[in-house]
Length: 366
Image (cartoon, rainbow, N blue to C red; front, side, top):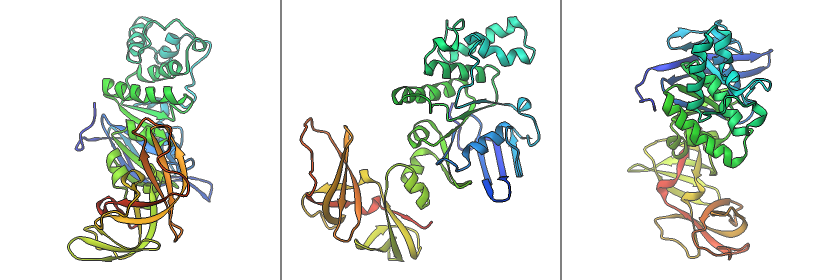
């Protein structure tokens, strides 16, 4: 179940700040809405405030100021066990001495659900996470991915309105992490519950979330669906943090007919399509995969610059080729390795042109 853009918010965060002492502001005046039935990601580097914000939603951290509403109810001051949320921790926090079924049913037991009703609910939850028939095992008899599913089943068994996930895949190896990303999306669609995940992994957020909030130094810098965030970042931080980016500084002057002229050191004046009338200092950004590496000077309709291949990073399906210009600009170009050969497409010291279409250029004011 993917939420529609007009869906009512299940979580409303209004002007929320969390201070630790006088000098540390972990979350700084954050306001955002999370829609019902949405898979929402809080993304950012370590120390940006994303986990603190998640813990405030869960009730494990207090607010210095601001309001959090879940399903219309102000939950500031409401204890964690009284909120319509459940949380999956980075460490899974399964009880090693209990069976899988007892782990999943523990929350039901402490809230007084009868043994008979518990058994059916536990069985249903294990089915959701594809652990049918493993209820009698102990956690140490399971793989890392299976233990993570136990933690998910335990969080889902009471059917909370919101499931909070704090870096839930960070302990898994790369292949299992990728498989579990797909599994979490399947599970969220199946149960229709709002998922809010905290992660520092861009690919994880891009592959799973309906929308992503990128955080930096306690602030939300941009909230958008994955494709919009990647293709149309609104500021230098988001452009540089999401994926790879060639980022230059320039000075802009508005031209005619929706064209912006930008003077970039080492490139000269380039003209890019833009409805923005911004002038003065701007960031110019181009994704490496939007660039072309050419042996001959490209068509004048392209933005281009000549340089020397200074580094080549072979990554299997593609290579990242770095071209350095005489002016000292260093550009990263992605070259697809689409021919079966062990011969490199380019070698260190080769003279090449880096070129891209003007329409693939981003102009960033912030």
